[in-house]
Length: 394
Length: 239
Image 1 (spheres, each protein chain N blue to C red):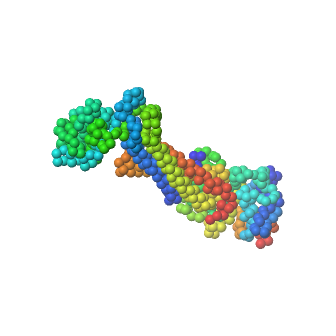
Image 2: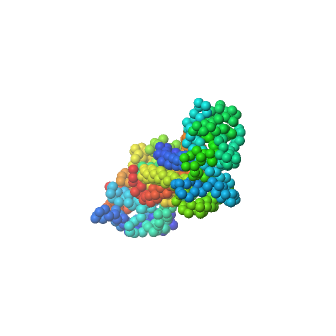
Image 3: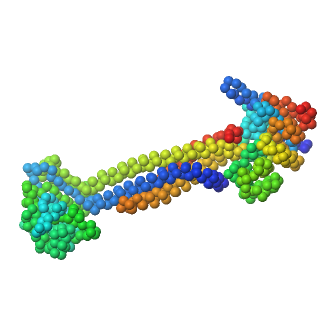
């Protein structure tokens, strides 16, 4: 066995070009599998992360059409309080299309919305200057606003100067009562439409500003992501009970979006697995080709060895080990190259994509396995050659 | 010698080797009967196509006859499996080929070691035997060289060393001087004679009568049949 190993190594070393060509297939196969899987995995987890930061425990209710029957905000709050074991936060949301102005400065892409006082907890933001919106603001439809750091810096030259200042929304004058802590990591990344480019006002005031004065969206959060199903069910039965029909609204749990994203990832992985399988199979056929050539080329050698008393099993061993060693070395080189490339490409793309352990293990074992399987056929051909025929060949 | 006469080393009884080529039946060996005893030096001579190569393959356990029995050292080779044949070749027969048939990628030492490897001998004993064998052909200092660094005569001596290494009962030489010039061919023949003097059984297969005359006994094959089997002096008289 040890001898066969030595012979295999010697033969690999003795035919550098041939061995290299054999390995090349495996190297490319293994490396591309690792690169593909790692990059996609890295990208997926990046997407997943940004998705998670949007709040996976959120459940939103949207009223599609404006039915004759409506549910008042108070009814929603009642429901929310009754189910305080399930829901952590709740807010009505009213989006307002408004131009934001202070003196002669206008903001063009600021998102303006009406929310309840718990909205800030749902977003997981914190107030830096002033105060948050409070219940009293809602009840009396106060013309107050909480603004993002970008708006504060653009209109007032900083959060510390904003409190108590005026802000005009479609001509209505609001008073800035709070500034939210900067969310963008670096102030130099400030731009129109960034995370800090927003104005929050009481939902009751926002509803009044909109044409039909109704609130058509609510956002709930659950305590536990595992409770989303129960929360969704509770919401649905509440809505069904009030509306007598389920065609006017939709209840969407972020976690179910997550589920479909996860499904997509699983499908991508399957697809990748298929591509990986094919490329490794091609590599295997390459190994088989070269091994077959190698057998033909070495028919005479096989004849000599057989004449000197080599048994079938010994010849077989020699060729199978050669195939296995070739594909193992190729596989190892492939892992190193694939690892380096996937890390490098990931860095270029700005995502973290270290080679995944599964990709490494699977591609390596498949390449070695394929090397063995495809090495076996030529090996058995070699072992079954008759010594006379083999000796006669030139 | 007394004992050897009783049990021949090689005994061929009614050996037939028949190939069918298309519709035609070729009788390469057509009823060969032959006994060779230990310590003999036999030349099997015949023109090309006479069937001498087929006979050599059968004697060398590289091939099995279509019909007839071949006893080698008292064992029936015709009944053997591929693996048993490999074992017989390994343990009992030392081949010397016209083209030397050394493996170019192996050193001289490794070439000679090959049959010992296949017989499963341990490393130390292998080394001992290889060096002893190379010593007998006077090439000990070439052990680390590769075949292509040696002259044709030297390569043939390496192949003789390889044949000797396993200490076989029979040395089978197929046109051993065929690829050599007459001077080195002479050396190889002298060496084979010396080996025979030391007690080795040697069979040379050749088409060349002048080489056949170097042996002690000549067997001539014609059309798959033996048409002469006798002492070299008698053979010299009829050619």
